[in-house]
Image 1 (cartoon, helix red, strand yellow):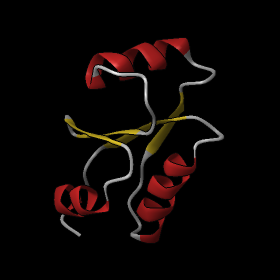
Image 2 (cartoon, helix red, strand yellow):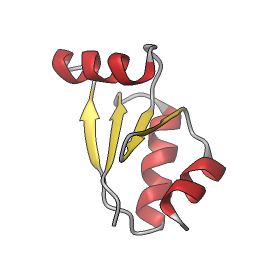
Image 3 (spheres, rainbow, N blue to C red):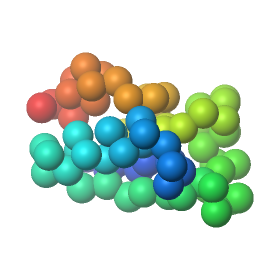
Image 4 (tube, helix red, strand yellow):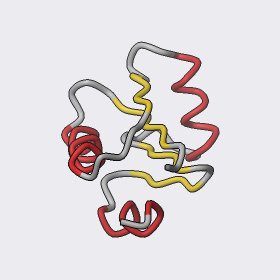
Length: 77
């Protein structure tokens, strides 16, 4: 199983879509609430070069937003 980290906010619809997609496919992930965690927010900006959420990090591959095709490809689903 690949290491998956999601940088999200509680009110973000697309963040929920990413998390629901991963849950449906039994992919475990770590979720960081960047609305409350300034350190993780800066980490997200460093990785993605922007402030938009969600940012999904799959072993160094960065996806901004909900991109079902890219998630499927990177996770081998």
